[in-house]
Length: 513
Image (spheres, rainbow, N blue to C red):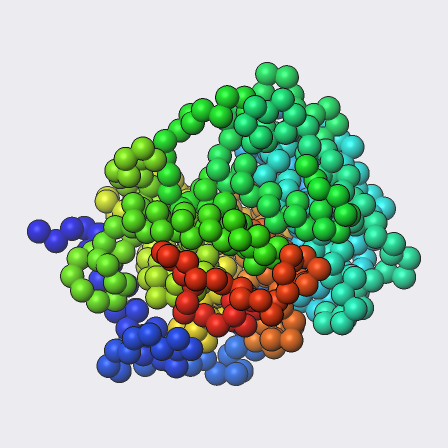
């Protein structure tokens, strides 16, 4: 009997044919030419430039609306054209209060996007507003993970862009600048440190009050990503300031393991921390973890585009025995293909991405959770997440296959047709009826627009070999600088390992993503 998943994923196999038959940098497999390949042929230069222009306009519609209607609040409400801050009246509203802290979040999160778009003047203006008006001395209880990736990462990225003597994005430095963003980053990180106090395991408490420390009686359970995704930002800050920036029982309270929400950026940061800092133990942990993921979480045929069986799928499993624990995948798992690209497992990345493209084509966006057994959404909303866009961009960088430009065009069209509101871009409340919700999260400007723009702007400094950067999990760019590493770049970046080794990508290509 053919499974529902097999029937639903027939399109993926067809779409993959068009990917593998084009001028692929890795040229792993080649299928005969067919109508699908013709459909996904190259995009003309004029069309690419139009898409680049339209993406830039999308960013500025959201950014300008935020500055006009919402600043200095944290987020824009794009339907009613006003701002949103913490819900002080309801401290238990963690959907809002974990992220918003009365610190102009959207402006800070968007700083390096302004630089990437070539808008040095607006970047300098935004930096001035942040330095002159933002303080982290707030009676706000926020999630350490979210504040780390959105705020600390943004401040470090903007500071390093200003300090770059090559000035690939133009003159970003205000004349009076004297490291104020770095001082703000150091101050913010110091406010995270109470999260580590009184922890018997060394894992941080998930939430901290920026003024008072860990609230008494607060929850102590944390997710793997929340505890393990401080490596990059804290590591860079430690190098910059010259100091080491240094829950209750450590007992697991949940047994679900997968590659999506609560876990994704932990895997990502093991590999990225190794590339940035050169610590072999990070690379060893990534390889061991990735091997276990493929052994216990991967379902379907052994090879992406050949052999019998279902299309490959990474499922959520019981951490104790590897048995399938749920029949849903979430939209954050769409970023896993990008991690696979960075690790050099490009064939598997193509396969992973194709699954999410199929779901995107069905609904026009990605539902927050999709049940692969029932072939329907479990959680209906789409909050403008960037993960699928990110993987699309990274796969295009790795393969130069025009298929991914077509995917990007589909994404841009969907965002404009389905999420554009009176004053910005809005969360889709339900992918079934496309009703909108009055919220534009900061990652729409810091990631979704950024990755889409870089996909179409092939000559951007980020995409050129002469300027090498790596993205944080919030999409902030950091330089791959020698002063960050223990060993020279001339040393072997990826030593031989027994199990999973990134062998499909040259060192230069790995570094430039």
